[in-house]
Length: 346
Image (tube, rainbow, N blue to C red):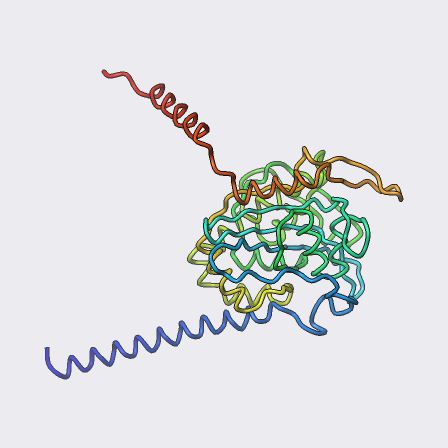
């Protein structure tokens, strides 16, 4: 190889490194800019008109020493028909719990009619907590589940639609026909879905997670919301979607608010990418619920045992270790199954 040829190769290699390095810098720079825009401040905050937003202090964020479980309250709201500056009740409330040790994600959907004591505001449905500010909503979720809720993410219908569209939609099995119309919003958010496996874009995905006009009402809807969110999460973890992350963030940023700092988002993003879904649960579960009426006559759902509910959540996040007897019994059962499935020799 001649000196001139070697020089040409080195120049080409250096140019390639500079181009790739520039593209990587642009990619991460775009992500950082978009992530920074998710946290709204001052007049840009959807909670700018709420007094005493800081009345209830949330726990300090985890120090990331490798043992703390991170809990994030995700709230979707329906802002139709409200004046500018008004904060709507939560249409859906979920707590995403990530364990950095096991790399497992647990998803809890909170029934919005759960009747609790909201610190400083008396007894009410839990979905009213956000109208007093995000810190109150986080404290309410924390008190109900018995776990520290360090962060919140807040969005509306449009934010959800933009997110699903930005990831390219999801392939999903709709379990039955769903139809509902309403003139209240000039039929903008009517629901019309057919049963079967299909591709859902942002608008049809919203139809699916909003539908509650069947026998199980919010109970079935909360399960649908968890299943759809798991599908979106799986799509977000794909290599193709990660490559489009700057444009995805640009689409959803105007419709999202959070208390996550840029550093928090960066660390949680890495943790989320490495983690897998462990399970999803409705809280409170059916066996710890009872229907009752408020003094004003409204029908709500109350928790029969707060202690049992908190223990139920702990058992999901941190499953109790098996005893030696339980492990021996499982091993014996597995051994018996292996013998039963052995094929006879020919």
